[in-house]
Length: 290
Image 1 (cartoon, one colour):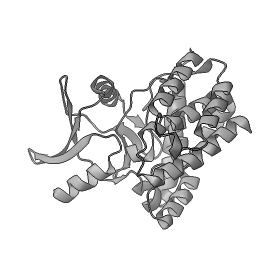
Image 2 (cartoon, one colour):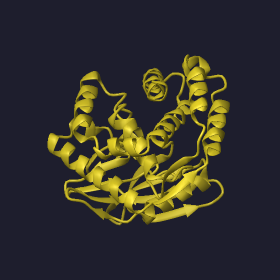
Image 3 (cartoon, helix red, strand yellow):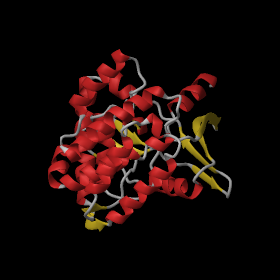
Image 4 (cartoon, one colour):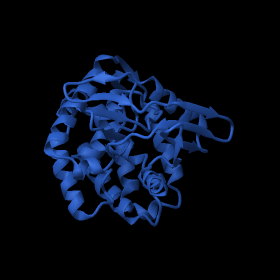
């Protein structure tokens, strides 16, 4: 049990405290959250309300939430412990068959999300406000990101029009870190995130964060990262390219904003993530500036 607890805590990217307990002969993950309680509560509701989606390869479901306790100081969530290939392990341990199946399932998921959304508008002022918030949080950290001020200026200059995009429910943080593939062909989603732009394009941007930039396995050994890159070539949903053609401006804006939101939370001792961020933010801004 001690080893399992260490593994799931090390794999957690949400900042929550996780532990596994045996409750009535069933292993349960107990998640304790003490920050941003209202927002995290909305994310838990999103996970609870997700409807299973059968696809030609996997049935996509959320890990069921068994119990939620909420007060002013903490949020306590109980979920069953799910065995399976999870997180960054999918990228460097998954076979070509897993990659093919994942690609098909994620394509199906994105297309279904688009079909259930409605055409709408997100005001560019919301993006500008978020950029201002990010800049405030970066005070004292700019030295870690030598080109970031210039990139943000170029990004702000690009953000001149409202976003015309499909609006609807989304996972919010759909990276490999937050999915698990089980032996009975289920694709389990967890760590949903309440986000400002509720759109399938947000999920697409998070998938790009992994399938193009290798977020979930950035801290693995070089050999594992190479395997991860190869896996992602086979598993990358083809519909991402379609969305880039249909919504070129919106996808660039959301992708860049998604990456920028990471910067304030990078610890100064985390040199791997600092190097990763500086590299990928350069690649992302080049999609805007050419």
